[in-house]
Length: 254
Image 1 (cartoon, rainbow, N blue to C red):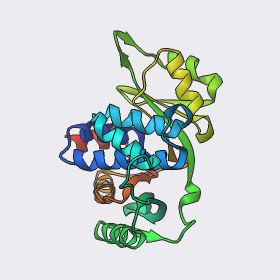
Image 2 (image 1 turned 60 degrees about the vertical axis):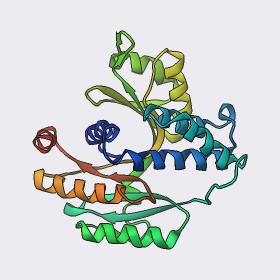
Image 3 (image 1 turned 90 degrees about the horizontal axis):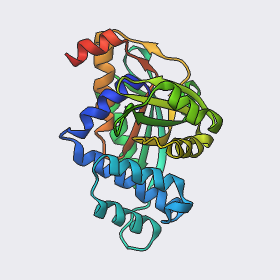
Image 4 (image 1 turned 30 degrees about the vertical axis):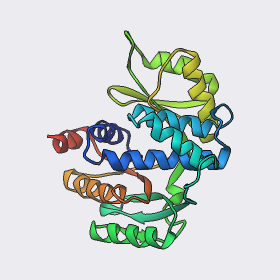
């Protein structure tokens, strides 16, 4: 679930030890394959592929799987599927806006599965353009606060990334999230590396320009909908303009 930072962080931690790890691996590998097909298999000239590989490595995807995905995508090895990106727009419980990003080799299957998962979990699909205007495509880099014997401060992050195009730094508890224009993503990630700061992920995401605050009941319903959508093989990302207050998040965690 991308969109609400604290929630995204909580889910990221759970995903690492989750029973759905196999699904997560498959999605990360699909990202690598598509990036290699779009920009070639050489990471020095393909920053999107570089970031897709970094994210997979951070999530413990085996190197053999990564290498094979690069070869399939770049055409060095047979067997790659022809994936298409499709965005679906819709509404969740409480009027929360959702964007569903799919990477699929079968549009009809993806459309049917997304529609079914949405309607079964209190959501509905909407016409193109209905909610997309509530989101902006941004560069999002997440980096841990605790790094090899040092504590990274917000000032450290700002100092490293401000000239590279960072617009905002959010405190996520154990990590920081750096937002920029999507076109500045590589520059921001590179600036962190040059400052000796390690990062967990760097990717373009849809960030909401306004959020809908929900109570515990609403949060539970939205989370069920998002999880049902994320469980689909064709769905890569779900973005929602939901704001779950800290106390509500704490009660759900408990």
